[in-house]
Image (cartoon, rainbow, N blue to C red; front, side, top):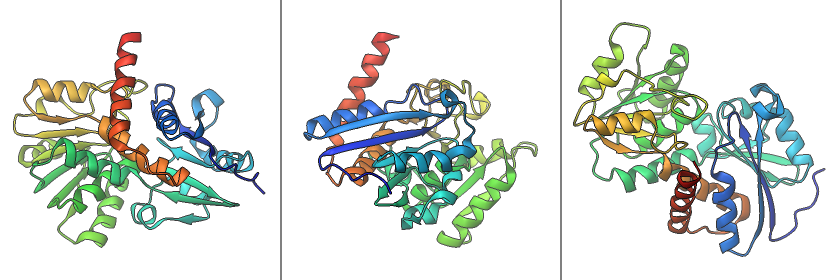
Length: 298
């Protein structure tokens, strides 16, 4: 049995690989300070711990036993964690991915705030973007959340590409089952110019792979595929100006970096962990301050 929760005091963690640069701890803790809450947010970095992603079940069990109130879960564990939870909230079940685990007594309940976070970031950062035809690069847990968000916002067709063709196909099948037969299709990165052809007719590109993170540097696609008139949304926010964001901007694309999604998903997770309503606008200002401090230090 997990230790009893102390009212007004919270212990939360982040599980994933290469999460040293994450701003989630400071973002959550600053908002808690504003609300008068005691709040500790700890990194559980698989790389630092010397663990594989398949150890996520052991970490969930250990965190529950240690009295954590919840965990955020990031790459590469958002789908692996599903088998180790007692219950899934409807949005997490629909997406087949979890980025937030809340401990209620001895139960571990999975939620997904990535989808709502991305939807709100698009509404703020690309409010009038055309969504008739969108290319999604990445079909993992984050990609599933982005796809659901875009289709909920009214996207016509999502064309999904992933290094693992079977994963792209599985996500497309799931989306067609929920949103309609014409709303999603899977492409193949290993077949000729499929991605180039899809981007040539697309309104926008949503990027949902780790490429561009500090631990995974580089561009996720050839730069020449980016053209004026194409909007580009990246979910990576560390660094904020990823190679994709920088290159897309230089090539005349409208750009949405991953910062707003990071803040909005964090706000939704904070609410789930604490039951307190965060101020998302204030958290956006916290985020700007934190990224500014990082630039000064580096």
